[in-house]
Amino acid sequence: MLGGAVGLIAALVIGGIIALVAFDTLFEVFHQLLFPGGSYDFDPSTEKLVQLFPFAFWQESAIAVGVVAIVIAVIVALVAYRRSTRATAAEADTDAEPIDGIGAPVG
Image (cartoon, rainbow, N blue to C red; front, side):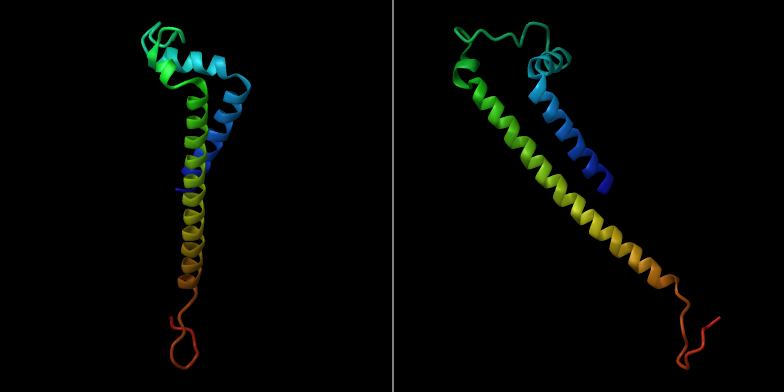
C-alpha cells in the first residue's frame, strides 16, 4: 500500500506539473487517446457544454480532484508506514529467544 500511495502522489504531482507547463498538448493527447476524432473540438459560440461549463470550471475541478487524491494518498501512505513499522517491531520481538520462569533461555 505504501508503494502504491507514494506512486500515486508522484504521478499526480508530475501530471500536474506537465498540465501547468503544456496543458494544450496534454489535452490534445488525452482526448486523442480516449475519444473519437473531432468529438472534443468545441466551438464556444455554439457548444452548450462549453457555455455551461467554461474553462475555469474544468481547471478548478481538476485542481480540486488532484488535491483530494493527493491528500487521500498521503493518509494511506501514513497508515501503511505505521503498520509496516509496527509489523517490523512485532517481528523483532518474536525473534528473541523466550526465557523460562528462572531466567535461562529455553531451548
